[in-house]
Length: 90
Image 1 (cartoon, helix red, strand yellow):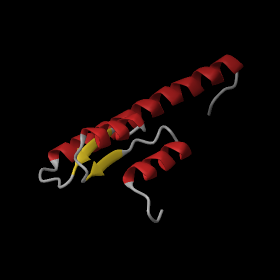
Image 2 (cartoon, rainbow, N blue to C red; image 1 turned 90 degrees about the vertical axis):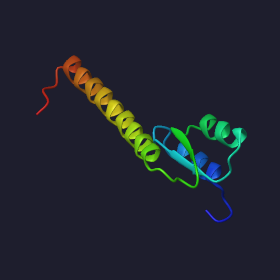
Image 3 (cartoon, helix red, strand yellow; image 1 turned 45 degrees about the vertical axis):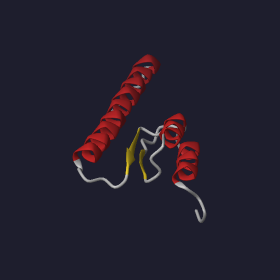
């Protein structure tokens, strides 16, 4: 997206699928930029440069854990729906 900034890209990602976990990396270190990222749905917001990768790894781990929880809940819902409708899953 030529001319777009990270918040513009975040908006487009969330329009496509609100469940996508987005870890924002920004060089614009202001309270406003971080709050806007969270309001638009970022899972977390980290500031560049990243000198210690522990925070980035922790943010990515948290994002994947959220996806795993969603996947588990959706599978459980599908299983219940299948049971309620009397369909035998293979």
